[in-house]
Image (cartoon, rainbow, N blue to C red; front, side):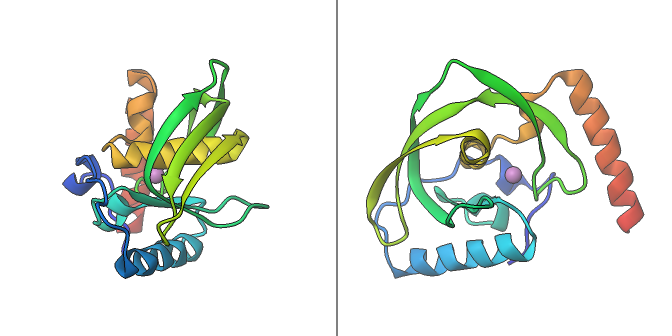
Length: 163
Ligand code: NI
């Protein structure tokens, strides 16, 4: 699957809840993970491949691949930390983003099974990043205007070189 990049309006839409989890979501989950692995990423959300429904895939080193459908963030720690992050939809640039250290999330997997997970560190960050995609939010929305300008300038340069 092709990954949409910054400027595509689908990345800015609020994704719709999945009303009934069915076989098509097992397929969608497999495609998301396949694309995620091909791109050597750690998270990929439906809207990034033009599927504006509430589903994302996460696969962090040392952990199993995970699919989240209709996730809700039910707890976030007050403690936050800053860590460098990027996005497959804004390739070639990274920036420090402040996020909660620990979270608790409820979601369903591609087979329709509900689960709750407590995550910290990188896994928590990726889940929050992918959750943002479902809301039409990108990591560049979570940094200062000054940083955003710098990141976008660099992105334009990187993109220019690829053409
Ligand atoms: Ni992203």
